[in-house]
Amino acid sequence: MKEKIVGILGGMGPEATCEMFRRIIKLTGAKSDSEHLRIIIDNNPKIPDRTKAILHNGHSPVEEMVSTAKNLVGAGADFIIIPCMTAHRFISEVQSFVNVPILDAIELTKQYIEEKYKNINRIGLLATSGTVYAGLFQKYLVENKIIVPNSALQDEVMDIIYGNNGIKFGNTSQEIVDRLKKIVLELTEAEGVEAIIAGCTEVGFVLKQSDIDLPLIDPLTVLASESVKLAKINS
Image (cartoon, rainbow, N blue to C red; front, top):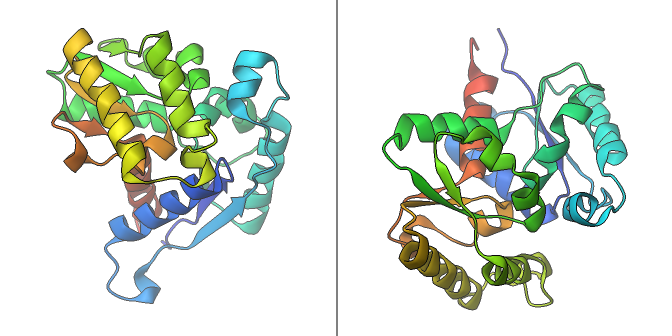
C-alpha cells in the first residue's frame, strides 16, 4: 500500500503551520527527498479568530475551516491535522462535512500522557483563554488535575501570544521565553504543578524542554508523530 497523504489545515497562525510542517519533516527520518511524506498545506489566515469566537461571540471559524478542509480533501489528503489547539473546539463540526478523518491533537495528547506520565497528577496549562474557557484539555484529561493560571497570569499568557510585542507579531526572543519561564515558575511554586502542557502552538515553538525543569508536553509534537505513523502505516 502507498503512503497516506497528510493534509494540514493551516493559517491559525501561519507560523504554527510552518512549525507543524517542520516537525513532521524532522520526525519522518527520511534519508533522501523521496523518503519524505507527501503533505498538502492550505494556509488560510482568513479563518476567523477562534478565541474571539469562543469568548466574545465573534465570527465562527467553522465555515472557513470546512472550506479549507474540503480543499485539502479535493487535493487528495487522506487525513487532516490542525496545528491550532484552540481550533479543536470546532473539530466535530468540521468533521461532519468531510469524509476523511481529522486527527484530534488533544485526545492524542491524553493518550501520550497516559503512556509517558501516568504518575503525574498536576499539570499546568499554557494556552489561549479560548482553549482554557472551552475546557478542551480538561475534558479529556479528567484523570489529571489540569491547573490553569489565575486571571492575572492568564492575561500575561494572552499578552505573550497576542500582544503587540507577542509571538503572533513575530517576537520569539529570549524576553518571551523568560516571561513564559516566569509563569511556569509561579505555577510550580503556587500550585505544585509537575508538568506543563504547551496548549497553544505558539507557546510550544518558543518554550523548549531545555528552558524548564518540569516535563514539557507539546501537543504539536504528539500530533506530528502520530501523523507520520498514520501516513506510513502499511506502506
